[in-house]
Image (cartoon, rainbow, N blue to C red):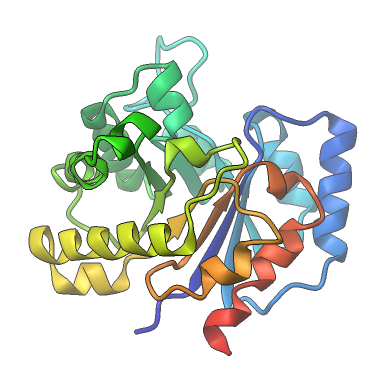
Length: 253
């Protein structure tokens, strides 16, 4: 079965009511590829989730940017998977490098979060990726494999998991992994899935790329056989996000 192209827009901690309204209007007015060709998810901050969900065209889904590792309770400032499910928010981003680095989320903690979110019916964009120091030390695959293994240790059904490979050195820096670098890691990660989970999971799981994706570089990246889409940061706040969504047509051409 062909893997459907997947484009996620991570708005991070950005936006005012007025700005979000404009982004939604741009997305609603844009001419985007059919949902048979591409699955599109945008991830606004929590406070805008329900507004965006209610006002956005139905073929674009919404995701939360994080959720708590277990059931809610005395965890001030956290949002539980149950709450997201109750609001009919279908997706959540987990393990983003900003949370791993700034909030010290460990591989194991991310693995537990992914498993818990899946158990509550959410679909998960699980992020992995190496720092510049790790890439220069030649340990990229060791790092990415360890991050993926921590998820695999807790997850048995990968149907609702999308893996986002985001080299930390390329996020928001303007530096982009070359199409060849992205393809190399995606292919190695797929081989890891074959060896450690199953050939079926490896063939069906979408591995998307994140890290300074733009309207200018998306088509070349999309042309690589193991790049199944994108997790887009800054560009998802701009009209060029439409172009990035439409790069999915490279795969179906």
